[in-house]
Length: 438
Image (cartoon, rainbow, N blue to C red):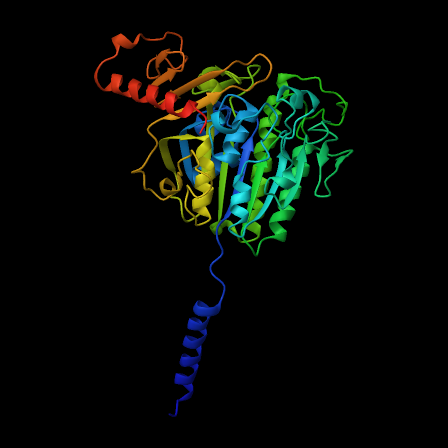
């Protein structure tokens, strides 16, 4: 058979195309960046209604992505982190404050199995100290290198030190060092930027549990008196919270910019949230009123947190999602993003919200369950379940969230009728079933 020159070129191109499909590399799985601010409630973010508009970079992610209105954490740091990282309710695997049970599978373990390179930078606080070991009956927590992360640069592992000026960090070399003249979250952000550069040609996951905006409330590099402030000082002043909020948003913007510069934006999903409510020392200007943070407490001011998900050219810009989301849901969502079943890892409690990112809202949560027993300080056990409209505590207290978000006046069960009574009975059944360790 004799081919003309033009036909030969066409056949060569077709052969190359089909060969690349049969023998070439599969399309790269989407990169995942999960950013979690510390002690930052729903009311602090501009896109949620904060009047001061201190978070333009996060607001921009919401504008071009999906803004969730009903994401709930636990009221305190460690319970939220354990739930987020393991996809399980604390009734099943919580061993003590500041501790992550090292026998648990984390989302980092799971996504490594899917070929991802994994990185954590920021706050760890999951290994514990002598006091925490004692309170947990001698149990020790988990180290970052044993928790599914290829690379890590984190604060508070085997030493405490400062988290902000002159931070003490635990490095890839598995040792703690103090970085004189540096600022904690800026160092973590630079580390993440470098990780992204080094892994731009493979699929990666970044988990960034920020130190900001937790107290002590101290100057940031954006503060006019930053250089004059003693680096050894932990003296806290709430007036610096505004600077901290601005600076944390600036760092989020830097990560987004790095992804864009490397041409990875279309194939990178960025998830932003907070671990619990804002400190009670902070009062935010919100929708024309004032909201005081309520970290540690179980009403909405202690548990209602921001959630923004951005995936350029996949999530419809300006999407608003009113579905209930809780912190067990992140693990199965991440698994779905990596292309595997959401329940594939050790009977997760969470429900993937991945389908909702592309507009499929047919299978939403009907309730949220929270087992809150931090085993720390003044905080006491609180177990509850809620829908958007009703909340039931293990103790029997019932609150109408439509009319009493502050939970000031419980309602007697015998006064509740019809569908609302059916909802309360569903919540009661949920509490009984989920509180028992599985």
